[in-house]
Amino acid sequence: MSNGKGWGTVPGRRKAAAQAGQEIQFTTLKVRIYPTSAQAELFEKTFGCCRYIWNQMLSDQKRFYEETGAHFIPTPAKYKNGAPFLKEVDNQALIQEHNKLSQAFRMFFKKPDSFGYPRFKRKKDDRDSFTACNHTFESGPTIYTTRNGIRMTKAGIVKAKFSLRPQAWWKLKRITVSKTRTGKYYCSILYERLVKQPEAAVPTAETTVGLKYSIGHFYVADNGAMADPPRWLKQSQEKLAKIQRQLSRMQPGSRNYEDAVRKYHFIHEHIANQRKDFLHKESRRIANDWDAVCVRADALREISETLMRDRGAVRDSGYGMFRELLRYKLERRGKVLILVDRYTPTTRTCSVCGKPQDSVSYKKKTWVCPGCGTVHQREVNAARNIKQEGLAQFCA
Image 1 (cartoon, rainbow, N blue to C red):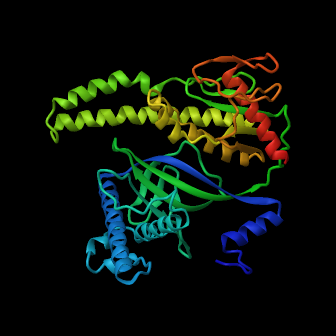
Image 2 (cartoon, rainbow, N blue to C red):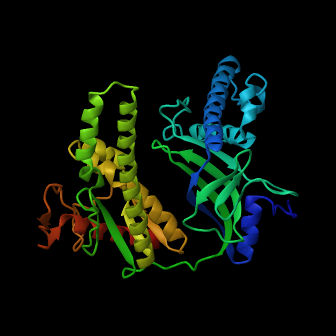
Image 3 (cartoon, rainbow, N blue to C red):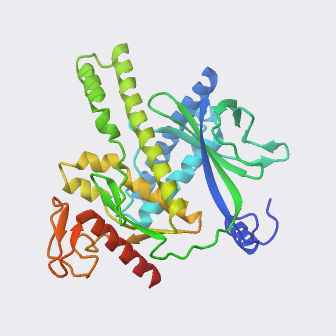
């Protein structure tokens, strides 16, 4: 319910929270859910209906644009008479597909170079998921958590395993139910909460760290520290190759073939979980220890395409996700992530005298500055320059 002067809107709530020395923060809890066979069947229907409604709306939008030259996306209500099975699933999931498609077009119109034209969804290629918003009525909310489950519209209470419990004053906004390729179901619960505004930290040379992306060490800090995470994909390469050899000798569609594909997906899921665990722990440690972090805005996709030999190592590192995790964890502590322009010559510039060189081979671990004679470790020197440039950029 709105309570005057826009309190019911997000900008109104943000303004009121700022006046009280607080801020609105959104937190997502991802939990494993264990649906019954009937609930799993309903989820599968919902996944299919979401794909169907997305494709129908996108098809009609394209046809309407070709005929009139105007942009228009029909609402899901238009398709229910012709497709009665849409009435069997939660209407909120269909509405969210309309919102997602509208958002996809807004981003495409705003930045066509960064966001492509929305594409049709296919069962084989796309992740199975649907989103539903929570609404509060006099009878109570449509979605809520219980001691050991989550109550959803039409599905009822779905058994769930919580690793972290929300506080009583957190407001549940929406949920996203997803299914992995290994057959596991998860529910991402989005909460809105009020938190005290953190005191803004003032970066200094002593409380700031510079990080240089490294193919061999994940990152190298200006103090010489290196992350050196395990090579999860490389460690599992032998198992993956063995399953791929088995698949090549099996009949596609057979039970043995499906079991082998499931094992293959299990290994990749395990690798992804190992990577995420490391990225979260490492980014949290750095966010706790430093007031500011300076990194270069490297285009990792271009790096992977340039370095043909180490393309897999770049993609397996997860450094792009690491930067995003660092950003939001620093922001929540009143700290800052400083991005240095990727074209800044940090590697070939001496961090002592500041004299740039014509070139420094990435194959060399050390090099000597001809100006001052300092012997540099190539990546440590680059991290120091990133830190100096980041602090200068912040203070400018």
